[in-house]
Length: 413
Image (cartoon, rainbow, N blue to C red):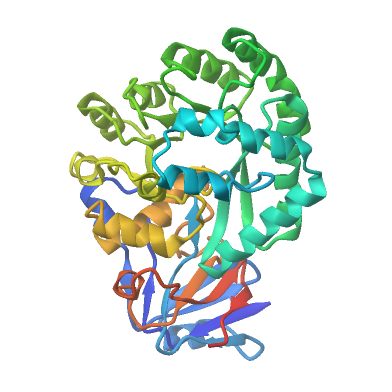
């Protein structure tokens, strides 16, 4: 099958051979006067029409008219907690009334509530709920999603979450990248050291029986301290997992520095990252993934995006979709917060949601940019310029989504 995207007002390629750092994040590879030819699931050519007509037999090509539309790579949401049971809406009202986290926990809220409901939910119930979330994400131009476990805190339920991700990957248009995150919290009824030992003992089983690529740890004071985190990451790396890390979110423990020293793919949150952490991220290859939706939801200060960029770090942005601290998959919200609250330019934001987000899930070679030979994941905006993404605040500007060379979503208004 051949798909020919004609007449786009612009093509934003975001092309790069590696994650973009610092000032290079401003370069999004904007082109005009070109069209896109897709063969099956790969981009065959990006060139002026006259060149395409001279080089290819286009008689049987399906045409997608992009007149008046900006074309960009599909967005990549590189940090989510996609699969969980139940909801915690009432808990949000408690938080708005002024309750702190411990008060909410004592009333039966917090992560323990999600663990209880996820353990009780059937696999089919979890698939249905997560599938609906993916539908919403697809409509906002998201074509690849990282999905963590972490609401089981026992082998049976963690594996159930990971199998839900695996099955969704087979039935949904959005591609899923699976992360094992048993080290999300310490469950009731077991000491921390015993729980860490159980996670390590189960790594081989998880690696053997699931498609989990990444291992993630919530590195935080009174949860998994720096030494605990290093022990867990060392063990996971020994079993072939790529590494991620919730780092320096509430208290600065040196999580960013640890992530870089362990060659983690990404260090996420980073609200409290130190100058040493910024320096380490700039010098290393670990992606700094910022989650402004969580800071917004929790009414806290934002991660220092400008300081990270100006010091030469590679930034990604993600939703942190979860049932507690950020119950939102909204990419328009993330874009608005990144620009208006973290002082990122719209070009830096686009880079952070495409090529750098691809690096954050080890997919640089296949997605995150529009280039010959790469997977044909792209979106058409309902405007001629990518500036619409920030100009029309909080509104979904995605008109059409192409995934692996096929139109999988098209808004009819």
